[in-house]
Image 1 (cartoon, one colour):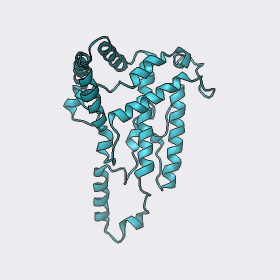
Image 2 (cartoon, helix red, strand yellow; image 1 turned 180 degrees about the vertical axis):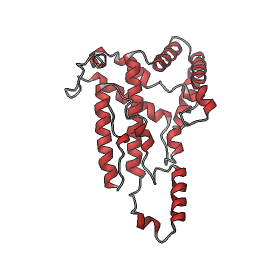
Image 3 (cartoon, helix red, strand yellow; image 1 turned 180 degrees about the horizontal axis):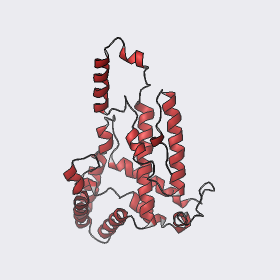
Image 4 (cartoon, rainbow, N blue to C red; image 1 turned 30 degrees about the vertical axis):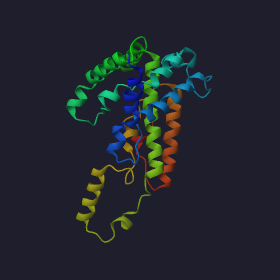
Length: 247
């Protein structure tokens, strides 16, 4: 057991590790893994509240999500630790090298075994089992934690767009007297940069448009997307149908 190494080296690395997706889009001061998991934990606390009457838990597929059936202590501990493995394995996303993606589970499992050794049981075992439960996605707490993980990501994306995305210029204003060839080259260069100042973070909203399953977070997801659409329209940007919540 080495508690100081766990707190300083493992948890400290999470405070320094910037989330890969935001780095790829040139986000100024992108959030860290610790930032992400902290708000995930705040989301998990919502399950300690009485059910909101706007959330329908009556259907067979939704009954398991009723707050009264959730081990909220486990969910909170899972939410605040679900990316702990990334302190050693790194933040591997679908846009990383194909070899890294293929080895993601193995790298993360190895990282969690190392963390277990550093922390020592019984806490080390609990952290490993929480990670494994989250990865297997078989319990309702794991399903909720995945919903929270995706929801927190798009909340952060919305906030980055709100803060950094510039108002869209009209075609004639942005191009001046340039030739069609030069205008096309500028567009290609801007697309390659993936910079939040020049383009909405559409991919994050498209990839999650069907991802969230629980009534509570589906409602919050829909509310967020509607709020985002208003914000983007005020800046002169449109929203594609794929960016809206899908059934």
